[in-house]
Image 1 (cartoon, helix red, strand yellow):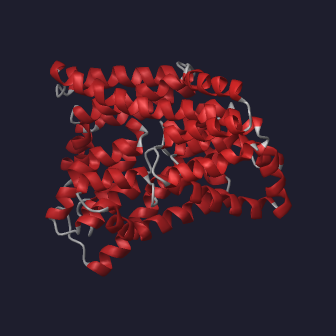
Image 2 (spheres, rainbow, N blue to C red; image 1 turned 90 degrees about the horizontal axis):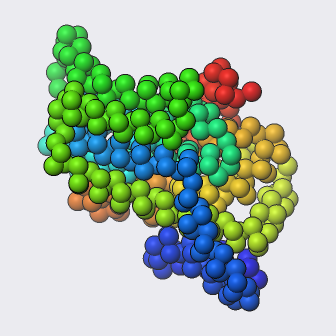
Length: 429
């Protein structure tokens, strides 16, 4: 009877109930129908227990660091640096958009922050240069999914918290896949630029001019090095690294670049608090949802169903990628990881898949889901920033999504892509 929570959950999502409320209402209704009213109290208590975690403190800190850097004009410096390097290419601003997303990923780890910050700046600039508004929004949305792949990554922090994996190992494993997504998107843009005769964004910068742009972006670009270097050297934990990132953002914003003012802080703190609250509430609700998943023995049923299809890991990985892609269309990456990670992870580890490798497969797949219709979160943000309807952006983003799907399968079937760096650094044996 408890298994009814799954169809109830899907129905609530389809009728438009916000994910947070659907995650709590579906298991609550199932427990009530099953006569387990006492467990409903446990269910909602677990919302708080799920959030009450020291490792999860990294998420609001990274959100705050991203807001500080965006408000402090660091985004503009990253875009200027990207334009100095790639603006002279045909389709230059589209390339600049993608490279800026890769650089911004090392600061915030949030696809939504990436879409909002870069979209508000680059979409109007691309439209002014002759790109269609829908294509500009599509490139922004597609490239923003790099944010949670290249470290720091809020999604990987959640996965590590739920599954007991090393945050440092997941961060390192995400570097090459994130770069691969960015390079793949650039190749598509280059191909489209030659066919559609996209404009050149700017003249070719001289090397002294590139050096000047690099110096302006020097302090922002140090952020991921400080975060990763500190974690890898054991100077601080990922949560402490996030707090250090906030301190560093305040320091360069107020004293180095002098672009932040005390009057900016209330809005910065408010925006970071709102974004963090949404993420943490979803994490808490998803962990409460996971309680009923365990009580219903759904993991055992699903494991039996999966293994009844085939015991070949390669075939199962293909099928799971299809499943995750579909899940990503409807469910945000954080809740999906919390719900499905404990179910799917042990199955594939037993089949010989390294837990860090599976973590990257799952994280990248569900991250790409942020840009897939009908419920992709960054599509809604891109629509809001650009003023284009989601349907138009969806049509324009399809070639870019195809490349990201290809990268997912490359990561899946060539483990060395994600596992080489964590293995060489000793975080994976």
